[in-house]
Amino acid sequence: LSNRLHEEESGYLAAHVLVLPEFSTDVSGIIPPSLQSLIRKHKHQIERSQHRILNPRKRFRGNDPTLKQGGDPRINLELRIRRSMNQSSDDLSKLAWLEKSIFQEWLKDEVESKESSVALSSWLQESKIHQIQPCAHVGVWRRPFYIKGTYTKSRRDVAQTPFFVSSDSKSGGLVRKGCSSVEEEICPHLASVCGGISNQNNEDVLVTSDGEAVVQDGSVVYGCCKFHASGREDIDVRMLLPPPSIVKSSSSNKNITGRPFVCEVFDAYRLPTATQLDAAVKAINHSSSDDGRTKEIVHDINGWPHSLVGNDRFHGSKLNGVGVSSPLELTSSSSFSGLQAETEEKVKHYGCICWTSVIIRSDQELVEKLGCLPWDQEENSDDQCNIFPLEIKQDTPLRVLHRRSSDTRTRQILSLSARRINDHWIQLRMATSAGTYVKEFCHGDCGRTQPSISSLLGGRVDITELDCEGIEM
Image 1: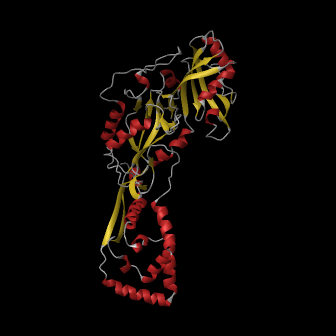
Image 2: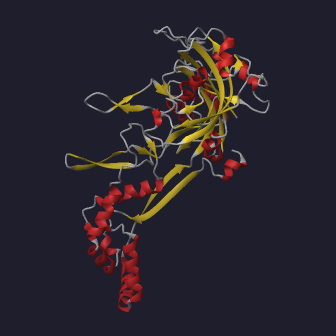
Image 3: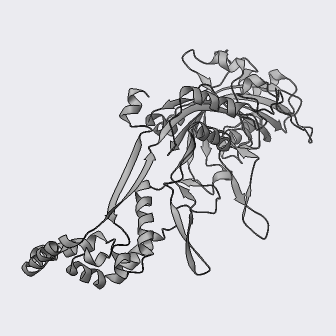
């Protein structure tokens, strides 16, 4: 590990030790009589508190079946001990794990009352005869560490994370969208080269079945491989590497890559070596059933044009379409914490295919209407007819208005190039500031984005295909 990772204790083992009397011990002999009296006095308050702790409320809304990372190994250890104590037949043992406020109340009375102090002193002398056998309860876990890389996605039915929506059927429930997710294609392989993920520190839940309380695995786990990406693309948007014309047009000190991600690994059995991370890259990108695929196969049932890309535009060759860059690297926590902050500063490149109601007779006519550059001429940004960079105003899109506040955002379309496919179909390539709603920039979103491709052409525009073609870092 680097000095920075050692300073952060990244991937270090941690332990939590609780030393208590054995549960079989008669606790009445090791608890002062005055404290026993106070425990019985506050019995109902302690029982309510115990029930609340032993039966925690659900911390995540919805019925998403995916496991969520959360919890604390120290709290989970104490929770397991509490439940074991709660199974005792002795009422005093069930209540012995006190609320801090009750213990403070007892201690205050003992200190302020002379009679109580004398009684406590006598009890301490008598208690020496009790042979108390201590029992150590130990929780051990590996602190989180971080693995960074970039990914590409060459299919239009793969979400970034598992994606579930409500079912339209009368039975309700959830239905999965897409064939897989980027997270599911990457994280299991990383967990494997880390020797697996421990489940010993996960949070248990108490479930009542046939009148009997049963402890089961909960939906919140501490040990897992948690996926974080710098922004996200829609499930029907491919994440590709840039075409040659974009690479030529970028400044020399910028690198255009796939989408950056960081995996936060909790409670792994070991830290992976560089060789093991290389093995993970091969497992993610390739499989024994690779078919030498060089492009995505698209069945065009509507007669619409679709862009096909060669295998130089994405990592790997698996049919699931997800691949990662090489090498994957261990990184510091600052890479994870800065992932989203850096998202707002990045330049993103997009390519799309649009249908328009306006008849386009030539490439020259299209370029003049949009005030943009000819196709694959992005390096000629000093063209006098080029109106870009262009500032646009975007109201919160109608498609996300139900989950985001209504606001008007100013964004930049940094460059735009276009070509004619036929009279009603065009292909666009653009660079935008982070946070731009590209679909809405194309069709105008009922006038909520101004200006737009629709307003510049003077007619209706529908976007049928969108690709993110690299992120400039």
